[in-house]
Image (tube, rainbow, N blue to C red; front, side):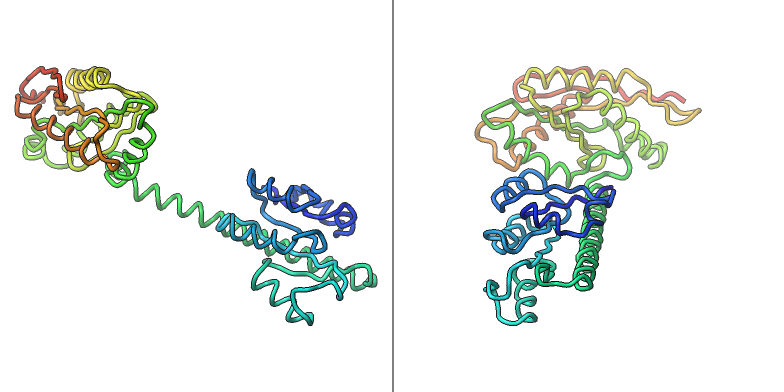
Length: 333
């Protein structure tokens, strides 16, 4: 992957940089001639490395801004000093100047006052610049590795290992965001469902077969919903489904379709055991008085689920309507 380098400075400054920078195939170079242009560009995309000419207006303030505004995603900033000694105002003395820059302004500071440098000094300075670019490359690589590891850990923390669905923690994170997005825009509905007589399955065949039922049910739910719908294992044999852009009537229809698709298709647990499994579903729709966290919405769906089970299971209950079809748990061996 190419290292993106944004050069902030004059074209004379660009031409004075080490030729290796221009010739390196792994570098993707872009140049702007003012810090205002650079700020605008960084708001759109952030390069891996900044090379900033110290003599352009507000160079140090720009380097500070990139650190403060971009925080963790800030590029590795190398300030190249091309100002004569009399024009350097940060500190007096080379060591103090360098310390002040590194403490407050940039990640690296190189004296690049090439106008008074001989050939040997220029080669050494060019090597130092390339060395700092390599440091910046390593810094960005480590940052990307940390991001990748963090994403992996986040995915593990938010996934249910048995069903591979998102877990309750993920639902508690996503539901408030879905509610906020749907306010005054699109309707939002929520289904809460669980497996009828699941304890009987566990007690009769053991928990491994019970786990297999949950896995097959999860697969069936995922493949019978729309791409925008979110499915979570809420806990045990309970599941929550968030239906985006779905009103109450549509939610009841979707819930009953799921109920029928689960109950009418045999669950094959192994070559000798097949079960007819049914589910009960509670349906609730977002209302204007619901809290932002989704607690009242979940509570209504849970109450509807309890009503569905009280009516004999294998049915859908909503706040205003119900769809029922009660059947006993059928077992085929």
